[in-house]
Image (cartoon, rainbow, N blue to C red; front, top):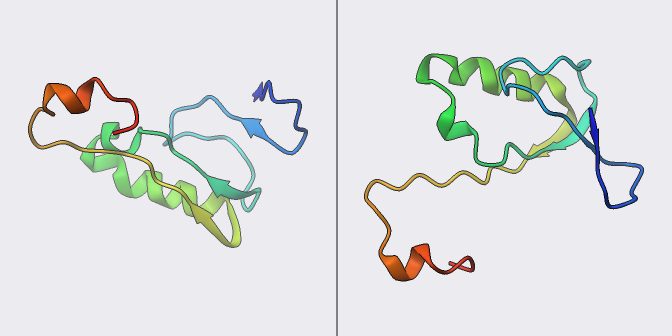
Length: 83
């Protein structure tokens, strides 16, 4: 496990395949799969969501931040981190 460099003690970063996270059930309040859901093969997506559900404490949340573009972005958008 990697520790956050923020000095906070209530945060852990886990480096793992999103379909193979080896943690106990119900150990986290929030999961943020940062831009990896779209990279999971279609036949493994249900496995990934099952794992996320298993890791979450009761009634907590997943924050999904994936973006899928069906066509290339215009140059103006690609050059602006805010967009």
